[in-house]
Image (cartoon, rainbow, N blue to C red; front, side):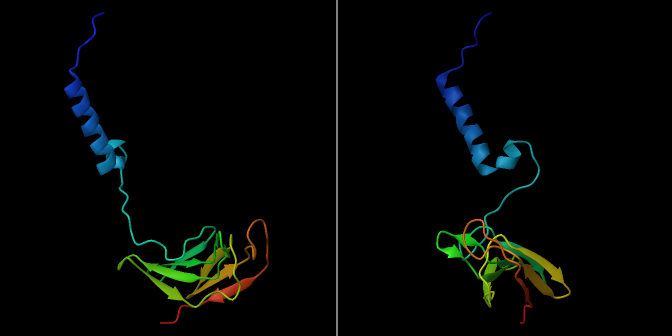
Length: 129
């Protein structure tokens, strides 16, 4: 069977086009629907957060980072691509849960110290404009 000789410049050009497609639109290059967009970053870097959506905003509570557990409450407004700080939680925690009842967000449980720690804390947050 004879091999097809493809000039190096053609192979290089094909590789460049393929790389551009991956960078320009990873989902299209893979043939998948949807697209990703970079938005405003979370002001306080952390993981193990609780989150809930209320009044068109995404609220983020607590979390853990190299500096310990956090009590921050922040909200993201997708319409304005901006973050807002709110009153901090009384108890810093990570790995907690959040649930909405009416116009309040209940933030329950979570570890008060980094690692595998636990609590039965139940605090409620009501955004006041």
